[in-house]
Image (cartoon, rainbow, N blue to C red; front, side, top):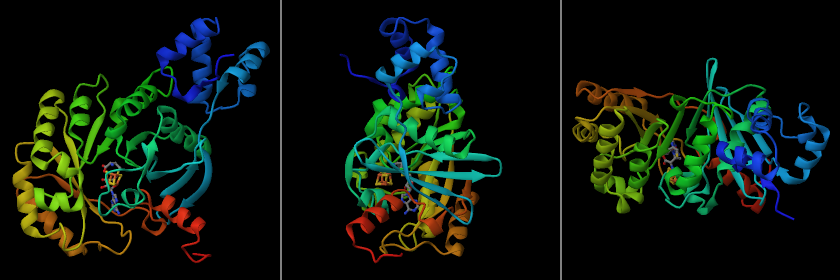
Length: 353
Ligand code: SAH
Ligand code: SF4
């Protein structure tokens, strides 16, 4: 007997192929099943009532629909939600749901852990376990939408992991989200966030779906960036800037740059001058983000220092915004919930905290 299929891992082309060749069904059956899964968030074949009983019986044995299982959910005072999920092999990942008025953004994980070890990041501190499959990436959104009882308009690949180190599953998940007969999410509602993995940026520039790009910069020179983000040894700031220029020449897209503000590390006004010089000639938008303290190594910049930094950028013509912190009370910075739960399980944290 052939192995059952993992439904969430199928692209639209694969759905068509499976239904016509493997199941000997007309194409519209694939559309119907996709509609149940991606529009109605129905993951139980028994509930797919417009399919015949025989077909449902067949699918029961041949199709696995396995979104991640919820382990824990936390809600911040500001409405930010954080979900901890368990995957089929027992690994755990996080998803954050940010709400801004009537719109919501899902912050999806692309890996279990992350191999890049940025010095400020809880995910980096937890090490790397494995890549997620496309279905495990998309499953986070579907499970969250089912739980919320509503569609979530935006997706950012800003949860755990470096998306461009898992580029095949990343791109496949984008195609699944975007496919009209599947999740039908517009390209403009999808953003990939990278720590600066150059080949990924260049590949994204050539992707047929014009999703947005966000780059975690955090430092305006090689020395400081290498200190904060070891990935800078492999893909230097100068190589990164060249890749961003190529990306922009090809796509005409404005690039979002993330800059977390760490007290007396990367928030000196002279670094704002250096940043402005680095970015001149590039169409960018800089988000200044309050650092979410992880293990006491760094502190969040004082608001006056953030304002002074932003003023310099503005005066030098670099568009920027000081972002409000989100979900600090539930440690919504990526990787923190998984880490905390693991610590509790390992008994390294007093109970009741
Ligand atoms: N690996 C990718 C995407 C996941 S990290 C990347 O680095 O871009 C998502 C974002 O969270 C990045 O901008 C990262 O710099 C930021 N981040 C990590 N730890 C943080 C913390 N403690 N406080 C605030 N932002 C943090
Ligand atoms: Fe990995 Fe991004 Fe965290 Fe750096 S910030 S360790 S790249 S998840």
